Image (cartoon, rainbow over all chains, first blue to last red; front, side):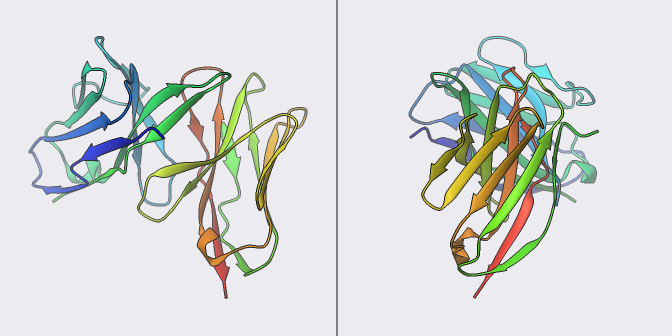
Length: 117
Length: 109
């Protein structure tokens, strides 16, 4: 099956620092990856679509200058939370897209739990 | 109206029970439908896709009603290990997936 890894799995940082999260497709190439955020007891909310070799597409309300996305290769996308604040504390999950015959399936990474003090 | 709506639960059922979850979606052009399972503090994992004709995978049966725009998931003979949050997921004919807030299931001995 398609395996997606994320690193780190958890991070605690001080307010004002930047945090980089990596998302890797381990046994397949992914031209498209997605970044989600999930607050406690809420659904996954799509933040942005990351396309290899081009700029990410951000969802409405997501600041592109705060959440920097780089998808430099077919197996790696990174999300950098710049100048993190406590309200950015959340569970960040990436997924990589695999096309099936009639639909596209997303395989999720294990998530990164960010706590900003 | 939310794009995907689910009853948050929790559904507390004894082992061996049959439990059903429903989900409604607002975009009539949606083409793909899924049920994902999410354990506490973990990533979602695909449980099954939902086809127009309905489909079954062991103790799990998924059905789609396009006319009424709802999707259902039936779990028979519940196991303790079925305790999780079940996410209804819809692809509105784009690359994106729209997630419901999930229905929490707790199976007790």
